[in-house]
Length: 251
Image (cartoon, rainbow, N blue to C red):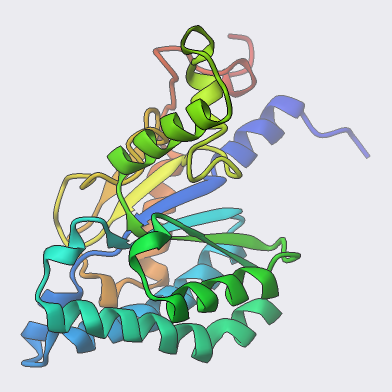
């Protein structure tokens, strides 16, 4: 048996993003189209997310980071915010055992100080119950903002005794909310909007973007495959330079 071409193997592996970031937009519009309250769209969105996690894992994605609740979402109507908080608790109770058994590791990123003790304990339970899973890591960004992330990383570095002239990109990266994961390779946003909305500002410096008109509750395997196919055809460059292992043979 011939040995596989290492360059071809690297190119094949690179065709699947190791880390996908996801903005799940369109729940409210999906509900309105069906003459239902916005909450029903959010509820449907949770069910879709659980299916999407498995679909991404089946396709070789190792990390999935989703924007569940931004630091700006507190400005939404109080009834909607309250419903979202309750939905998170219900989702943890409903899906934790299932996801834990399917090899999903759950991480929560964001400012936990503004949420209830009950919600924090539910998150801690989910993280502890899935800590040893390795099939895919699902990071849920809740009460998260990209600018908040940079600020809190700076504060952590200062608290750790880092001097001003010692602060560099590597130093701050160690203190970012996603320090345990590689930077996202692919950023997907549903719902037709073409902006990143303060999500992973630091980490998305060289991320490829895929925007779709599909509303999140309608996002299924066909849409996942379309996003991954688009990514596979991108010629990725980092500061104008393609990594040597991804260069065409003979280049």
